[in-house]
Length: 394
Image (cartoon, rainbow, N blue to C red):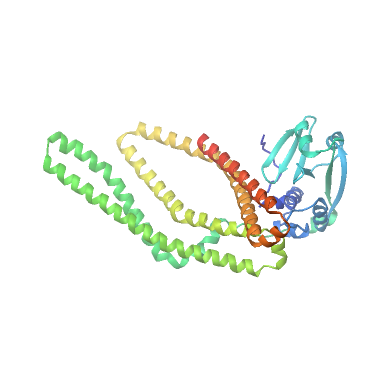
């Protein structure tokens, strides 16, 4: 069960990033912020992940005292000073930041801030017959507080702006088309009202024909604007995508060889594939969102003009709809991280099979490699089911 707490939490980028991310959370708890890449380098992370010794080495590199030991559940609750790092389900690391007589509070870099009963925690932590488990205790030295913090700022979507500057004129034309489409949307309901109130009530057939011709003209104009907008979008977004992937490859090829020794090839391929999602967001999603917001404002004005009570009902319903959507965003983000990790692992397995087929056949390990890929597909299938359940529940 997820809880709210002031303990800092960072999300791991992939399954091998849990150890450095745990250390990053503890450093932030003591008032210092370090970059993910800096801690990954100090922890000597490899393709298979990081060890407890690697985390301890990284902690000592940022002036923290470390002590690794095996202790019992009773000692963990009564004596171990929080926060500290523990191995989790024999393949992961988490931070224990608070303990009580009945609960253990955990900061999981893969899932968030969680709370477990002693029995639940014990099953995931010990996995041994003697009811003990490893812990890595950490405490800052005096020199820790004199270290310089990482000043790297998260850019957010601002990094996309330079890619659009060469297309200012095309973007202006897009917004003009958007404005024209909005005006047409605004006019159509009033034309329909005129047909009923004036043409039908007065049985004025020529007037009805005139209004219907006007409606047909507006609808055709709206269609032409839409076609024009789609042509502009494909020109902008295609160039945008090529430039962005080219810059990604340029930066990646400038990195040292050590960087590639700690990451799977499938991870890089998946990042390139995910650029398509950014392209779709910039092209269709953003424009549709802007169009929907303008249409929302326009039809609110129409509702206020016709009936104030219906307007208030509509506003309350819209507010509830937006709140309901935001309620699911965090769960969707968690599934998205999981999907990225599993898809990159699947691509890595395929690359290993294709590029190492000679070695695989020499070692007679065809079945092992095929099963490895199939297990990843099963995980992807389960993640897809979870995403579908969430969407249907929403």
